[in-house]
Length: 434
Picture 1 (cartoon, rainbow, N blue to C red):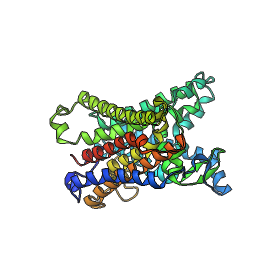
Picture 2: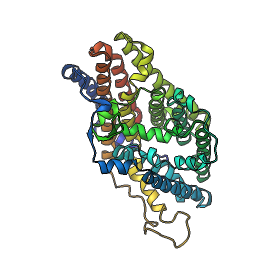
Picture 3: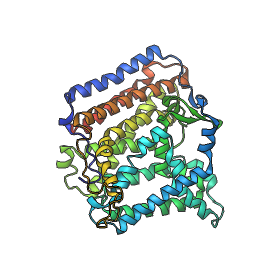
Picture 4: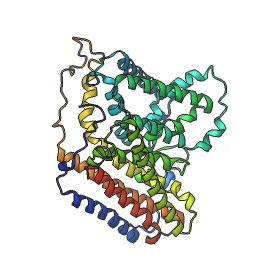
């Protein structure tokens, strides 16, 4: 077993016929849309001004710079350890902690951490700590006033680069590759932060933006006045700012998971991807992202025009409604990876440098327990995550339509709903090797 073999259940793992799952998933989206039109006639989610304030003690703890600094220092120490292990640890991927720590524990673990705790990487990002240290000797950032115009496009590019590494680059699991990526990523991010200022990380660090995006479906949020509140995850998602580049971020996430599923199919492995080289993988990833972008933008713009609104602003307006869809695909593709392959990180952490006789936590001799979750459970989580993500997406899109026009005709929203049905059926088909 190697990193990036995501452990996604195959078609035979699905405990119900694939055709039934596809038809049922599509029907669930359409039925939920009809129910919304009949019974959800006014905005109900509340948005950024809603929520129950948390106690003052919790607010002070969350906002204390000392707490954030301590978390960032811990994250920095962990990153330095991973780089050191990648450079000086065992040469074999299966025995080196670094690939498992990056691709499984960190990348996949950001999802449950952000869902449960909010935008954790914004708080614990060690690059912010390094930047503050360098800022003492750096000149005033000259590009700070230009940063808002970039929106989240830099984060979309950053995520695309990492996802290319994870899904395409042949040597992605080599420890040396992990070290080069982490060092190179830090250098580039710190250089850009030196030019744009610390706010760069909230727009250009793909991992921080990804964590903040997933956190839109957590129960924790902030009101417009900065107060920390407890509120409905849907209210959090509906309050997502219509920021330039947000649509690009979610399209990159959706398109990359689509390619991840496509790359496992017989069609890809015996056809366009038969060479199993960097060029075919790069073209496949780019084509998958482009296809998702065309479908989403077309559906959003057509829905806007049918509602008598400018079509060019619709992709940004509805981008927040795609967040649960992106999350659903992420859970479907990475759930088993975290539960099964995630065990490898904790096994190797007991002896990160592979020194004979060292076993810090008494786990170094353990094996991955492949029975920790059954194939039926994996398949049901996959189907449930995709379908639930799309149902929530339709709900948010309906709420956004009500807020935009104070009315929601079926004909106005139908193009975007059709696109969501296509995403659902296509995503499940690729997930189970259709």
